[in-house]
Image 1 (tube, one colour):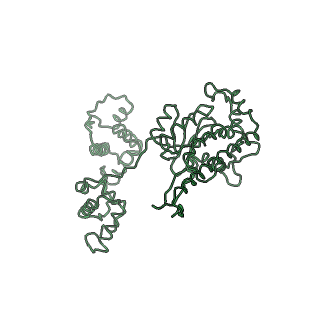
Image 2: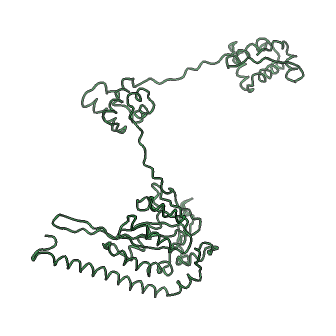
Image 3: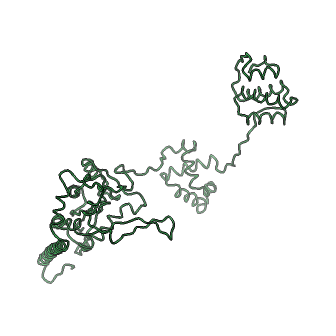
Length: 441
């Protein structure tokens, strides 16, 4: 900075007040040059011998020219007063002692290559075995290496990357189907949860050993807010059997469907189901990792509805159509219009501060249809062509007890047919066996 025309404190004060006509030629480019100019200004204007008032003027002048803050100017002046110079402090960065040499990194790269790049823990174990069991002295230092340091060398060491060019970081499998989050209906119907219930396996013994037959599958779909529930049956959970029953179940709901939530099973998290839901303008979501409550509602209904009414025993897959006749003509109507459900009320636990408990008051039990009608502006959620007057006729067609009697009768017919067909199959099979032989022989 060429400020040779300023030779007195009066001129500096005039410059600071803006009354002087001074033009400077800017030459300062680096920090070293700035510090040198500050030191020259302090010497030229006699800062150490100056009075307190004049020192303040010099401080303001240095701050205005350099652009430094008041605290920074004070630190520079204190350094000049203490040692007579204004210079950059030399910084000696602390360096840790190097443990592993370039030769150790080459050994690591060589071991990685011949062992086809195992994970860090496995490679560390190899180094320990080389040093302890096979007495290879060059692996003594590497036997104490941490797994983290192994990956540091793999990712950041130029020596390693020159020698082991094939190493790639493990890539997680990402399934870009559905959004992983918990459903948040906010009191609105149309947020479905789905799960599959398997109706047992049958193990038979024959000449070639044991054979296993899969039972029928129940598809359970329930709305989170109203607990409207529709159940269907499929012979298998492949796309050919699952997609038609899903479309039929979704169509049964009287209100508009917004979201379809499943666990991470492959029967629902696949492109076929995703495309079907996209065509219906329904969003697909899936449960989060280690969050077992994301799909808890439908899993609870699996036990209280399907297992309670259909049992745990084996039912052959060929009975899927007969079971669907029972579900769609009788059982689904009973579950939604005649079977009361409990609806939770959230309360804060007084004994444990901050903990929220679910309470099921007796007066809060109602059928899913009654729950749907109790929602504010419930008409706006219904599908086009469906009205509450139509649904009222279905709800009042039978009393609760009469509908329960019909369900018991139809379920009895269903299981009688399943049992008799099984007996006929066993009888026909035993007729084909040689005289004196049993099925297990």
